[in-house]
Length: 159
Length: 327
Image 1: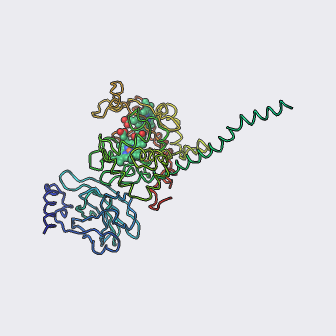
Image 2: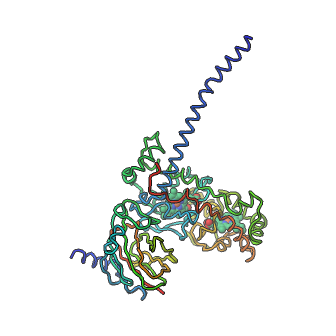
Image 3: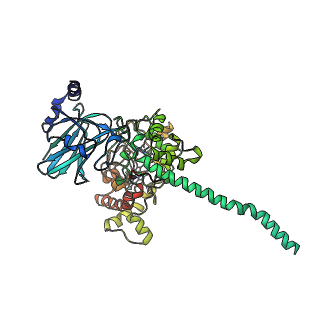
């Protein structure tokens, strides 16, 4: 019950102006809760679904064992988490985030290079958008150096 | 004979303190170098540690990325609490050789004092640690490796962790940022020629007719001095040096940035308003810069490209240290 309230609260706060969202980001409106994994072992319980926005729970950085050391791993007082997502086809993908955590997308131990960065428009609830050219397969998505215990997260396909 | 013995005795008397002093001096400098080495190691850890910011989200390296010669590719970088950034992040190649630090300041005592600006500065708030010195002591103090490193680096202060020791370690690390292996440097050293005709012509222009070298003076490619080159029509709230000195003569005056590795540090200008080197060159309110032909600008850019030093941006000594404690 409490978490539903939190979700509702966040929804009203974050998406007050959802009408401003461009169509490819409409999935941003409906959230389900996914608790981040603290290590690779827990990844199966932290799956994201393409085009479905999730409210994600993050953990204190000292409790996390990242698969690959993040470029910005965050201090002891920051938050992060691991997730996984399976992509059925190759293409241009966008990771959309409500907080400013550092994002790494990793396959076979190698982080993908981002191709574009943007900030969300004001009042969209979006803080950060990062685009990647990705292959099909299962990726580990790492969030690190975040300021809060929660964020909203969406992976969507652009092309 | 007596004279001879006297000479020897006098020699011994005079020489003795000197002879004794020498090993002591050596020991002193050996101790200094142990301390300095530990300070560099410590400074490197601190540079990459986001615990220097209020919410653990931001380290020096968040804004100063080695692969971009320690600039960051944004027009301005927001702070840890999302306050908007005020100026473009400058690169840090050869930063230990500058007397004047930041885009427009003329009385910072050095890199130690400068490092406290992002840590606890309020205009803009970057790492947000103003009034939180205790928090830094607490966070770093619970880490065994930091305890060892602070003790080795600052034995006289018994390894005490505070803004003073943190900032001096950051200074020692940043003083090692030497970039002098560009194609241009190889040309100067070995007499090899620059790779393309454009670069060769650009060099001639740079040191000759275009007079870039009068301000972007080799070998630093900055005269470490202040100039007014702002476009006249520009609207701004950042008046550069006069905001520090209060002197109206210093209005719109900024320190010449070094052009070493400039090809890696876009965007340009103190406000990040120039996206490319071409725009930056044309932006100077200088007759020469504004009358350069398209071809001449291409040549100057080709020359500036030869100032990029890949050994600097790939030097493992400046990279994020491994988690393992070095001591």
